[in-house]
Image (tube, rainbow, N blue to C red; front, top):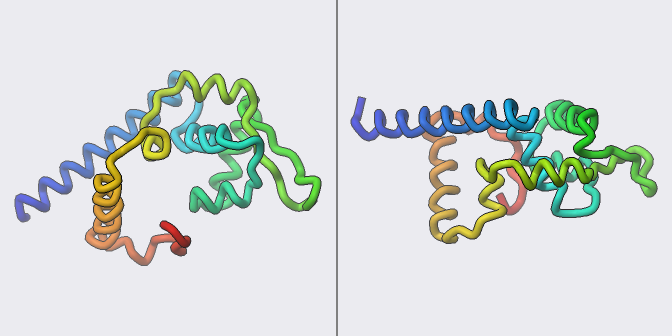
Length: 150
């Protein structure tokens, strides 16, 4: 194995371990997952968001997101209501308890890119590195349909 390939694998393993450790800390200290914290942070940006728009912005399977939202609702961290304009659509909103949790939770993971100012060139390099990872790992056929602007 090339030294560069081994170094890349080690860096990936370190990233995975850091994300796993972060998720364990969130679970232990706040009772939520990294995904749920990301959802709460996004919900905190506006009064209410259609569930379909949230799913689209997170590029997630409806069942996965639905499960996370149901758990957040059960914990009193968000509300889910029917949209008055479209009875089939559901609106999700963060509660005051959800806002308080977000204020106490550490700012880490991908959502940090939205909250902290970073050098645009560095973000461009990160995007390219992730796209390279998909290609180099042979995962191209497993990428969800590409959304404009991503």
